[in-house]
Length: 183
Figure 1: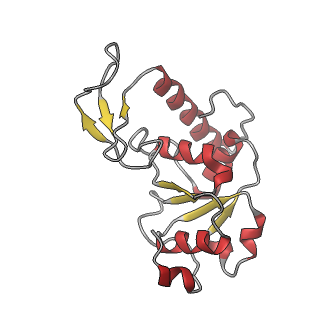
Figure 2: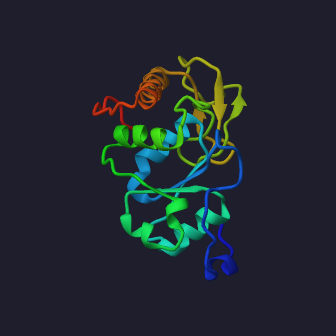
Figure 3: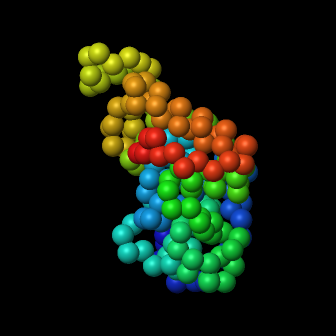
């Protein structure tokens, strides 16, 4: 949440100082909603901007919350100091965006898979599986915010395989044009 006094002042931009380089936090604009969900699937703390959020508020939120601002909007780079806070991705397709981001930040797509809610970004908690389909197999996890239940189904295997492909592509410096599974 942005405090009113922070929103009025000029943000001081620079690389996020909170956390470690191995555990960066992100703020995605609405153009990157699919990438946002994949970052959450990989275990990264990733917020999504609201509709019609001004550039100044986006930059202020990134500073206050110590996040990298991910966008495809080149106009954000025109703000003073934005080049050290904003990562403007060139790629259009989510798979290419994933590889580009991983190469720029040495991002590990298998950082902490399926440890965050894909919808609201909260860290998941272990759950006994109450409310899960009868044929589902644990371990079960539940979001403490939206109460969504997660378990290891076929979708998790496919998503984990996609994360592994992106991890390999980033480490090998390759580009993936394959959109085999898009969230």
